[in-house]
Image (cartoon, rainbow, N blue to C red; front, side, top):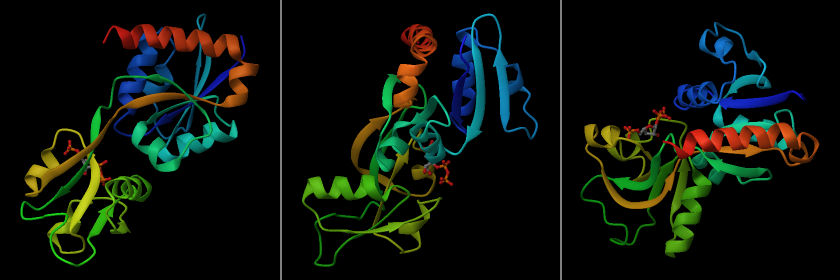
Length: 213
Ligand code: PRP
């Protein structure tokens, strides 16, 4: 049984990914009791796995370069970073929406000034406004994007909305929804050939669990 290295996204998606892996019969005991370790073994009679936890943009990087065979990552990160790996499964967890949001008085086509848009996802925002035929200026922000319109840094934001609580509690409203996103399973192109049997076994098992959701 060849070893399959799996890059998992730290944070919000972590628990959901671990739960899916547990449901297919993988040994996730080290992941459930992780301390400060960065690499977690997961070998049992079903699978020979090794897991590591990284930030979402790094998941795609590890998979692209083949340091990980498989990654579990949000579609938002994939859209922002582009892709040179296979996207094999929608895991149906971590469901959110990409949205344009602003204070209630915002009108995208009002006034002569070029609108300022704050976002953690400049490429997604750029593509959205390109399709809309609107010329805007994008400001890259690293987090708490909802602050930008409140403090007058930007006219609106492009961000992910999950429950909508952050927008609501900060007095912002959705102006337009861009697209739905969720967690995906991605596979390194070379691994798909060299570790085909092991990877297909995982894809089949995970798709069964996901279909039941
Ligand atoms: C994300 C996103 C919103 C929030 C949306 O931020 O950027 O701020 O979650 O979730 P909600 O609709 O359920 O309120 P995250 O918590 O990842 O932190 P960050 O802003 O520091 O990036």
